[in-house]
Image (cartoon, rainbow, N blue to C red; front, side, top):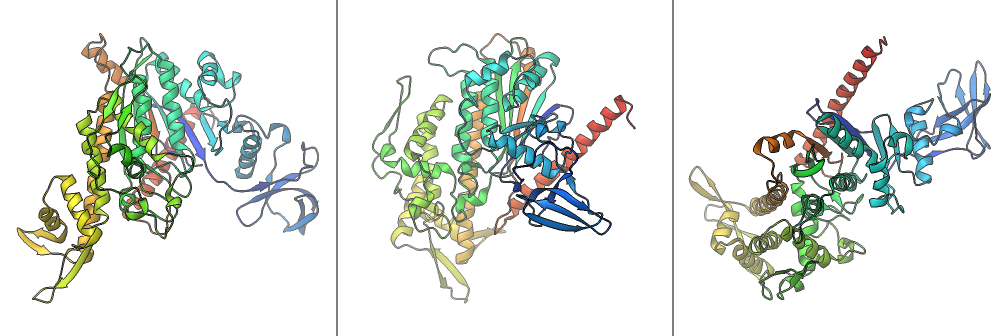
Length: 548
């Protein structure tokens, strides 16, 4: 299991480990409690395990009856096997209760609980979660959360749950006034983003203050920022239709006297820039590109976003102002490799237009004014138009290749729209893309170099746009200054916080860029840091108990 720590080690840590696809384990249905027989796990050679019983053990060989009892496997004498736990403890809620705590027994125990829709399991202070990929009735919600809020010993009174880990951190903060950290890690598609949202929602529920009419509470703003970041920083991958393509560290501040949430901040790491200008087969670029294309009729026909409170968030775009067409296959940045059907980039059961309305409403909820949001939409449209700009080369008088923008068809229209939306002249944008300034001397670029410049500009624009979304979110989540707290008390609130780290999952693609190397390297360093920290804590425990 991959568990990642933070770099600040004096904090009290809580770990949430999420598992995605795992190894296969099979066992004979007749196997029950262990009596005098030796039940063992046998590795198949393909990374999987199957249970068996030793039926013969001589000086020459060991024979194990596996599967349904009809197959026997012979092993050399002295072969070491992993002993199988008795069936009465296989579904334990805490893996540390297992007599034999090794890979096959851990996987079998988790699989047994998973079959009963018990996706959460403790292993000491760590909570292991297995992504169910389906909705489980009554697993979340205010009613379920209420059990943990009212419980004084949830470890013994209630089943394992992410609510329990979150509640522990909150109570520790209130009692000891010490900062807390919840680490959420796992492979890509394991459910880290959803778990982070659940943690934040539970913290907001614990705070639960009355809200002024027409004003979004700080708790509501904290919850709303999650979907906003997902719109601009999440994408569909082969493993996950809503995969975070960046790491984030959320700090939630509390007033320890009242127990109320009083602010938050979000720090992000390593946005996957390569996805801005292209995506692998069967995947998508960032959600907001598709939201924008799917909501053109609403945006360009003077659409009005009617909120629940009846407010109107209206747009001034006229027909064709953005110059886009509602077809993600038309733009190379939103068209996956080898994709020929627009249905391949759509998400079943999801309305891009409705998601766009929700995202724009969230921006208004956070206090972003209409002209600023309109600029955001123009900038996103400009990035899409850049994908349609093509280049043609010609030979210069000296024999060198020089390039210019193709002035025919879609490429010419894309140049005009991109420059207009970016607020510059066509000639200036062409100059930036087709030439390079070195030492005060401007030189021509080749077609390949110009294409790289175009993609580099698109990456820069979208990255700055994502950074701006983070700034807007943080501005709306700043420690509430409307209360009667003095500056000293607000400073104290900043030291009383619960942090949540949602780290990006380790991935390896067919073609891995330098940024993927950075992401995977960071994962490995965090794993190493965790191993060192846990070993240190165990040694301290042994010293206190005089264990040598």
